[in-house]
Image (tube, rainbow, N blue to C red):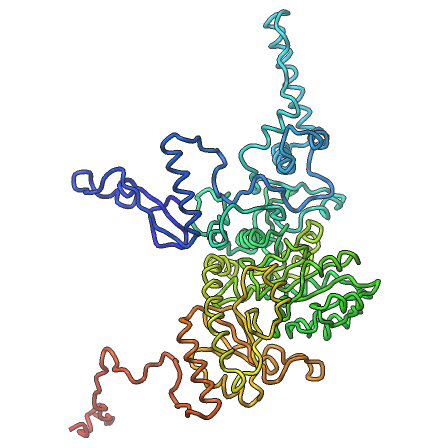
Length: 634
């Protein structure tokens, strides 16, 4: 990006003599006029080198630049969402679209974009269009008459040429208008979320590290900010009393949220994604696809909040459910009924790390006309993209890896089809559980470093898993982690690495004693005891009394002594030392000190500046003549 600054996660370029140092006069400047300054970011170095190589060829006139040869995040060649059942086109353009879709004159993937553009340019009423046509006809007739009978009449541009012109360089989404009709029928057909590209068939040219960084959330913004602005507004002015613009009310859509949802959809290769206030709000939206009498199959080893949602909320709406081991496809087949509409799972599961073959499960679900939903919170899109495996719905608690800093809450629902996108958009709008603009900004910021954080966390996790395996059988019994020599069998490991690019950063292990596990957690100095995971900080918890405590004990499938670790980006040696020390404290080999914590209070350090201790001021006594010193200060 050409900017005057440096030091961003994005790679930047500038010419100091004409930009950052332009205030220096030519007489005093020591800079060569042709000097180029680069600020290297966190994208894949392969992509950065390829970018510079292409730029050098263009500068040397070895290749001609393409007008659309930019990663500008406009995605003009992708179909747009949502699709309206009644296209907002005049009759001529609609007929032209139908005719041209069967030909090869124009890339069919851009036809819908062209239709939107044509319609946006022809928003006049039918009467205005008729007047315009009459005027043009009269002018053309008069001009032809004056030029003589030998001149051929001027040819009007063909419909195909008009559509080719309409495609243009890009589609201005902000210029789209939706007309209101008194009947109300058209209003119900209006999109319930702002128009955006459909990424279901999108193949990103960039490496995963670059995909997290190279994204412009507001390509239509005329001032081209380096970061997506926070649109802190509840409402948007409309173009007229009988037209709707791209945004009207922030519950229905907000530019900052659209940017976030587009980036999440791009990373997941989703038709669309929707940002909710929390992960639970996202899961709730998925269950709203069900009706009374519908049956849902859920993995038995599931997040406690989802178990509570199904058994204590959905059950009261007449929804039926079965909890099975989705890693066993035959068990899933036996549980399916004619009323099964949804299969929901996690892979790896939370917290026992059971592996489900998502491809095989998708085939089972689709064979019975059911949706497959996957909570992929533990496997963010830089590791796994379930939609490309046949999954219909992917849910994330974006509080975890998308944010990465435990400073805000968010949930995503990403879908594979436009039909599901329309349904989820309606639920998001009607429930009002959308994500607020400032939280959208925080998640957008966190996503830029997601690849680096997950990569470092996985490297640390592999070393910590190896350390825990060495503690068997004295202090550690079972280790649950997609890693060799763990409790996960080789066949499941093959399935896992056949559908993902890494192990993830979460693991669990048992100690054989609930009390030992509690002492171990209490003795940790770096690992923070919390109910969540996915932060830059390493975290620990006991699921039975924390994240999964909402599951009744008689229905819980978890060992009481189970400990779950979320591995952060600290130095692996420090984390291993912390666990080693905690194990010694838990086994009474060493005594835990009172101040044995990295609490950042630093009470043993001298203060700066040194406080000056002054003697207490002597009390004053009031008399009829006034206030006098008691003399005690002497």
